[in-house]
Image (tube, rainbow, N blue to C red; front, side, top):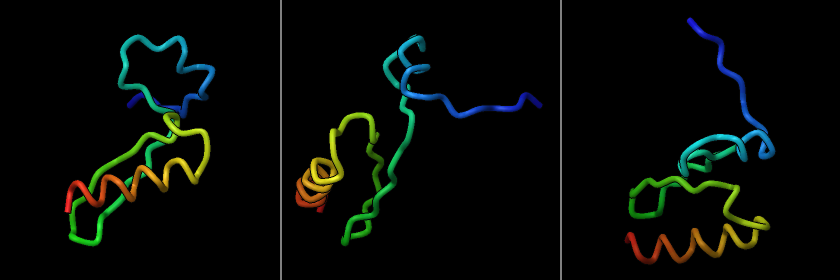
Length: 60
């Protein structure tokens, strides 16, 4: 089996396709719905928390 390695953000610039993400955050909303967010899309934890709050309202 081939050994996998974690890619850095710099390495991801050379990956073909738009689904590459250096780190995923899996979240379960209070209503039980689960979804994932890519840390690369946010400049701070506060930005990501605002997105989580908005998505929880939408999904629940």
